[in-house]
Length: 64
Image 1 (tube, rainbow, N blue to C red):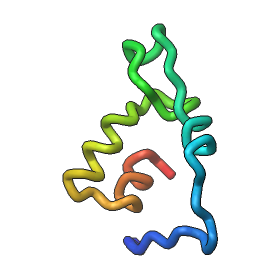
Image 2: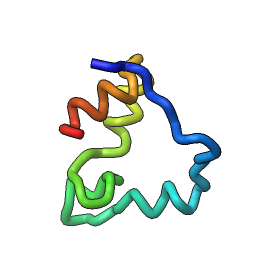
Image 3: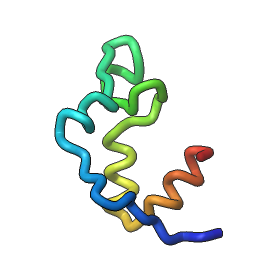
Image 4: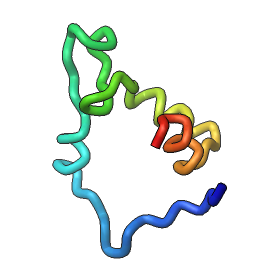
């Protein structure tokens, strides 16, 4: 498994781009912000990143 994550060159997402990927619906995941189209809490992803989980590890655990 290759654990090196390479962001595409010159690809910096602006705040509006990032926000379009997050949905908040009171009927889904208790109204917590989630990744659009998935039931993955944004706070969970941030917790994993803060604890040292790498982006490739997150993507692998999400089935990508």
